[in-house]
Every structure is written in C-alpha cells, then in structure tokens.
Length: 95
Length: 486
Image 1: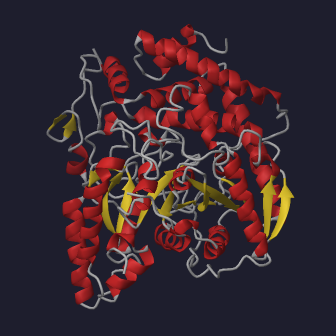
Image 2: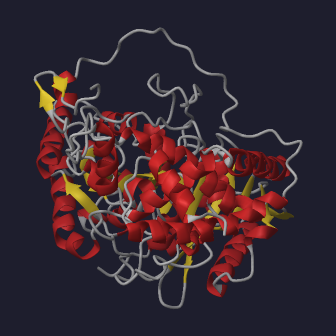
Image 3: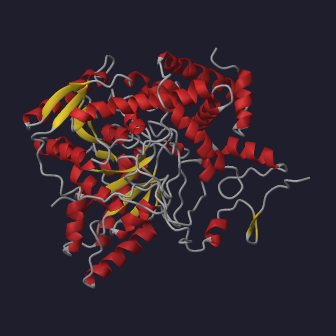
C-alpha cells in the first residue's frame, strides 16, 4: 500500500474537504493506484539536479506601485454568498 | 459563397471591414448555428446573445463612421469558461462557481474586444480545466462533432468543438498539460499552446500556475496566428507575461519549410499507439521532408517520467490555487454555524470527483514527510525533462510528434480509471513542463472517420516557427478543410 485510509483522512483535513465514507474508500484506492505508478520516479538519480519551480528566464518585471484598477466594490460584493452592506458576512470566528 | 458561419476568421473580418457583410449578420449567423447544433454537441455553457448583438451593432456603426475596429472586426469568437468575462457568468464548469459573475475582463478577453471580436459565449470544459475529455464538467459532457458517442478531448473540449462545428470562427482555450492541443486533434481543428509567458493569464482561473497558458483554436493555422497576435504580449497585471515584443505571426507564414531541421523524438513512437495515428504522423513527416525540411532522429530520454512528474507538480499547485474556494467572498457557500465546518462542507458540495482527487493528491505530495519524495523529486525530474528538450532543440528548429496516441475515445471509456485518462496526455504534457510552444494541426483520419493531429514543438518564444511548419503542411494537404457532418 502506498497510502492508507488513515492518511487519506489526514490529507482531507489538511485540504478542508469533508469526505463521505464511500468517497474516502474510493480516494484511498485511487491515490494508492496512482502513487504506486508514480513510484518509478524514485529510480531516477537526481542527487545533483536542481529543481525547476518555473521555466521563465526573464527577470521579474518591476513597475510603479500605483493603483490602476477602477473601484469595483459593488461588482465584487455582488458575488458574496452573504453580505451586510459593504461587508462580507461570515460565521463568528472568535468566541 | 459558403455560409457565413463557415468563413475563415480572416475572410470574415476582411468582409466586415470592406462592408461586404455586417458584423450583425455574422453574429446572427453564429448565434443561429449555436441554436441549431449546440443541443446535440453541448459546446456552450452560456450563450451571450444580447451583448454579442449589441457589440456587433457598435462595430457596424464604427465602420459606417469610417473607423477600423481591428483585425478581428465583427468576428464571433467563443471563450473557455475558465477565462473571466466582465458581467458574463464564468463557472469553470464547476458547481462552486455556478453563479459567479466576474467584475472585470481577463486581459485576453479585453484584447479580443479591442481587436474587434464579438464574444458569443462561454465554452464548456473539464471542471477547473482538470481533465482530458470534458467529461468532468458540472454541466455535462461536450460531444465530439465527428461522432456524438465520443469525447472531444479536454480540457478545452467546448473550445475545439465550437470551432469545428462552425458555432464561432475561433476560440480561446487554456493548456496546462495538453488541454488545447488534445481537443484540437480530436476535433480536426488547429490549436496552439504558446510559450509560458507569451500570453497574459490575468483573469484566467488558475489551475497550475507554473504550467497554465491561454491558447487560440481556429480552423486553420493563419487564423490561429491572427488570434495569437491579438492576445500575446506583456501585461502589467501579470508579472509572468514576458516583456518581449510580439512579432507579426501572420507575416511569418511564408509557406515553406525549406532548410528547417525537424527532430523526430524516438520516445514518441511507442508500442500501444493506434497504428493509424502512427501511420498518419509518419506520412506527415514524409510530406514535410518532401517540402524541403531535413528530418533528424532525436531522443528525449526522460519522457517516460513525464506523466508522474506532471501530475505531481500540477496537483500540488492546484491544491494551493483551489484553497481560495472557501465560501467566504464568492462562489457557493454551504452555511454552517462554525467557520471550519463551512469551509469543509462548501468544498465537499462544490467540487466534483476529479477536482477532489487532484486536491488530495497535491496536498499529499506537499505534506510533511512526503514533500521530498514526491514534490521536490518531481521538480528535479522536471529539470531533466527541460534539458532533454533544450538539447534536442539545439540542433533542431522544431520537433514533430503525434498529439495523442489514439483518436477520440468513447464517452465513459476512461472515466473508471483516472490513471488511464492521465495517459491520454502522454505526448503533450512534457511541453508544458518545459514551457515550450506547440501546435496541433490536422494530419489525417482513422478508418472510422475520426481526426488525427500532428504536433509541432518549438523553442521558447518561437511560435512563428511552429506556425510556419503547420502552415506549410496545410498548404500541401487538405485535412484541415474537412468538416464534421452536423
């Protein structure tokens, strides 16, 4: 086994995903199958190989830190699942 | 004269600018075609009739006033539903964004509009662009117009199908592991994945940020060149959009490959390939040689590790990118009294099975105790894959390969085993890991009449070369002229 049901539960908690028991079972089987196939990577000697995080060789572009986007508060708040005037409503966070 | 919806993008724009046809007539023809054929193929998630007609009328008024609306004057185009359109619902084919209406346009959409295009609607795809068949869409599968029992490829299935079916003259897709090229190949149209950094991703819903690129789909290479020219270039709003000048891609299409050295990677002709695909691609290579190119065998020795490398890097990035869907500021919310419970139930209800699988795989690969063995290891092998291409492209101007090992498969054929589905990307994903440009161009049909695609891979920022190769091939063949029987 490349991954256990217990580990799947732990990862689901990290990913903030509530899984049904059937989903948990399916994901354990799927991830096990996938990770087993991916184990072939271990055979490659990478001791002297630097990682690639992204491929761009160009240096980061600098620009003035100036506000260019027009105010869009209403357009953004229109997508809020729950709002109170110009605020997003959320459940109580601090007891 | 052919029906308006069958015109090439260049021809349509030219007629609008010469006032031989109005933008309103073109748009009405596209919307009529959508109404007639989309119920059978399901390319669109949202049609944009009212705004499209208003835009077309505005373009006609500008032309009447003697102004030039741009190279895409009055041309109906479609946009993949992971690309934000101001005021027009953008869902990523996910339940979690079912009612999301962006407050702004993605840079590529703003540039299409500035070039005179008419946005006729939003195109179906795999949820959050995660898939190879467009079956992972919350609104249902898109169908292949050549055989309605088959998939169009994915994730930009709607983008390829809409163009193949004549619902629009060109479209935008996104390509993270082959998501423009695979559906283009399966649907018999032309699709380009530009170099990483060639096109802005501002306003594009993120899947895997070190791999995602926006790319055009059209019915011939010259139309793809026109759309690329319109959308490419630096964008102050996306620091990864390279500050390099944009050449005239259309001007680069001189119809010849004479003197070009084209590499044939040995690892891309493997056992288990559909024989008709291999035969069609080899015949295309012979054709290119006849046209004056030199063909050289090359090797990309780390190809066998590409699938594992990609699915670790991409899912790790996805798990981080999709952390933003928490039910707080936009998207679905499952109301619960406690915040943590709200997050967990919202995400459980909003994401489909493949998205959950990738979030889980990516979270696992990044988690304590597994990071070095999976994520870091994959990033190191990514370096080796990049170096393979760098070496091959030192001696070759471009590489030619199949786009996929098979033609379009049946709906449901690969949904039971995620790994089998991932293998559909075997010839396309390395290109994203290396950040290179690659074109998919039609090069034949199998005996059941399904299209086959030829892939042309180039050096970074040498889109002009891959387009030139595809264009020269197109001039010598007729494959791209065939239309599906709808």
